[in-house]
Length: 320
Length: 199
Ligand code: HEM
Image 1 (cartoon, chains in turn orange, blue):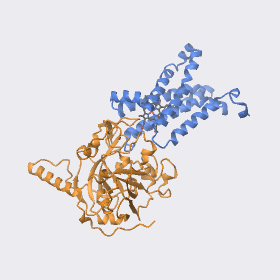
Image 2 (image 1 turned 120 degrees about the vertical axis):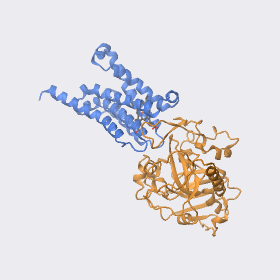
Image 3 (image 1 turned 180 degrees about the vertical axis):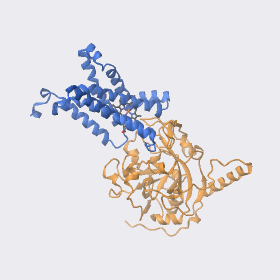
Image 4 (image 1 turned 90 degrees about the horizontal axis):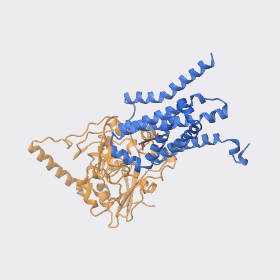
């Protein structure tokens, strides 16, 4: 198969929605300042890097933050669901120590005018990385708040010029059992696959993350490139991406294939739709300690204002 | 050393051995060694030990049959330890996991089949614990024996509980199920084994 490399497209040529949001946020900050109000909830400065991985240069503060406290770095990087490195929560950090995330290419193809391949270094140097502090809600009813580093997925997708037939975008994780020892057992149908509707993929909140806490992603968190869709359950945010594909049909998604009764294609965070085996009304905040109480789960993980309009007219009980 | 002293020594040793996982759990809890999600760790470890102790209790007879070594006089203590861990497991679930959200707890017991099954197992273990005294044993006579066959059902339900709560990687529950099945097979009397399998 011949893969054509796209000619140089300057990223500055593309006005993304995040620029728009940034402007809006700037206005908001200005207003707060004018009114002399505190800026709690809006990230003022970037979070402090813990010095564990190389720092990401020229980080922009896009103004995305939440009211809740950040989950400590140690917990974000030691409690992971990444079955490619084992099914226990502490397996990924242990079993990914030797994982080499360079060199790394992502193939982008399917329904687009300029299919091609992109190198992780080009992504890191050619696209401004932003800090985005998002809530993460796992389908297993726990949550974290993570300061991701990344950029809007739409920035990358537009580069490949999706056609009118591109109704969905799908993603695949690396499939290499030598490098990802968890794949030696057929716990899931490898490679891990996920998908979004094109409007979800182009939404300004949807990002590709290259780092967290101001530094390159640790292996256990999906290095070198992962998806982050903060209003969906964590498993939608696929890690270690090597392939992105535009399609007309709804693509396969790993957990959905594994158990369609329990995991829908959309998997939006929704306290009203229970997982058949547990309630989704509450969740536990990681880092809260033994005697922390549970917290009420919000519709779309608290991002309803931004994303509810994507689903108007849809029965979210059926399309869970 | 007299036999009585030896038996008492073994009993004390077994008692401490059975208590060790609980002490270890407390130690880890007080020292913050339970990882990022301590509540999950507490639930899982107490659940694991409930099932393990139940299987150990059910291993007493097969052990005597195959090796001749008998822990029969300590079986009650082993069984009570299983009940003890089940109570710890339930307490953690109600107090620390659900934080007394009674609607959620009732909904869980009714609607989530894995909890229904775990709850049933506990409801079976409860009368066994209550009637485990020698006095009760004497009073119930023959009925005591059939009542205490409930331990097999509780163990089977405990295995099912574990299998049903597992998301994708079912290796561990299947190991417990395999142990349970082997223990059951070892209990079969010669005449209960089909002829072609008999030696
Ligand atoms: C009222 C009774 C019970 C309740 C409410 C209950 C509840 C639970 C819950 C919530 C979990 C964790 C599920 C998860 O993380 O997804 C769990 C795990 C477990 N429970 Fe129970 N349980 C009960 C009785 C029992 C009994 C009687 C046994 C054993 C005979 C048992 C053995 C286990 C085991 C082995 C685990 C899994 C531990 C692991 O993953 O390592 N449970 N239980």
